[in-house]
Amino acid sequence: MFRVLVGNLAQETCSFVASKHTLEDFRRYYLYTGQEMLEKLRGGGMEVAGIIRAAEEAGVELVPTLATYGGTGGPVATAAYTQLRDEMLAEARRQADRVDGAILALHGAMLTEDLDDPEGDLVSRLRQALGPAKPIVCSLDLHAHVTDRMLESVTAYVTYHTHPHVDIEDTGYRAMALLARVLRGEVRPVMAHRKFRMLAQPAQHNTSRPPMGPIMEAVLAAEREPGMLAAGIFPVQPWLDIPDLGLSVIAVADGNPGLARAKADALGEMAWRTRREFLRDRTPLPEALRIARETAGGPVVLADSSDATSGGAEGDSTVLLRALLDSPVPGPCLLVVTDPEAAARCAAAGVGREITLDVGGKLAPAFFQPVRVTGTVRTLSDGRFQMKHPAMPANRGLTAVLQVGDTFIVLSQKPVYTWDEECYRSVGLFPREAKLVQLKSPGGFRPVYEPFAKVIIELDAPGPTDSNLRRLPFKRVTRPLFPLDDI
Image (cartoon, rainbow, N blue to C red; front, side, top):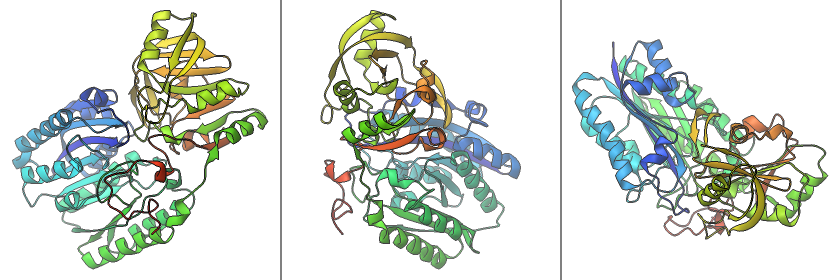
């Protein structure tokens, strides 16, 4: 029986927020060590669940290190990253002589306070611990920022094929299945990587429709060709302000570097030729509210992607709230705003009490301003709930629902993903019964909301995760870079 070291360290960074990610931010989702990581993540829908399933089918024994998911936010504090990395590597060194290889579930778009490429740092140190010969396979989110250092130490990368991400567990399964073939001597992976000076609007990353859909179909077709083992396209997390940012492609062939290079070139150039198709106008807020009023029934979903908590924003935008106060829409209208101070004041007032306070605009003052409201505290909670898409625990800390007229504002201590209904249902609000629902995501919510939403509107608004990338204060990216530059 082969023995394989397994670990998971994932976080997605946004460069345009002021906060730093701490160990507590990782614990809000999950942080497991040793056998606990296998017990807790088995069958749960994350990459490690797929790794476990494939390992059992292949007769591979998994040797656990550490598994943690930090969600999204600002750069990871150096002390937090160092502690997580060193704990994982310490176990790798203890097991180095007793394992045949390693598999890691990574994201690929994490920054720390002092590292632009922590994933490259991690895998290079893991390679040192295991030696030059043992295979290392890693899974990546398709928003990964792939670097040369990441490629130097890894045998093969396997990536998501969907956005919205509905193949997270499947990606872990495919990565482990490939590693099992390597261990059995059936295949010899060689990788090619090609990067292009372009960014794509995140709402256009959807792999079920153009322009990304046809490109992903070509990726999948390439994987099925004789001699190919894996392929992936990375439209990248566009809210990273670091050198060498850009869309990239990885192709993995069986012992044939020329084939890998040809496929990476062809897939990347296909994306480059369609770069202008990724530019898309969104709906101004007054027009969005007009559509909401004129739409019979609901819910009308407003995708507030410029404050995307799934992209690293703090979630404290007040743009929609201010507009609804100035030009109300008959409700119920459901909004989410990260504001620990407002949540605490609601808790101090108590359920049923009326309160006047300033809401939002305190965490990202470069983009948003607080709005004064008077409303009634409807519910209070500790902010813990179970997400269904993806299936994992969430904890947004102290949370209050404040009713202002027909608008129900979910005020929380920490940001949370809004991909599924549980964001609202966990505090007694029901999106299917609402007139208007705010979702802070470019598109990750679509698998859940598209089946029942009357209308989905992509808002044109400012924020740290603005899809209009030209409005963001990039300083460190390598120029020229499309669409910041017309190349």
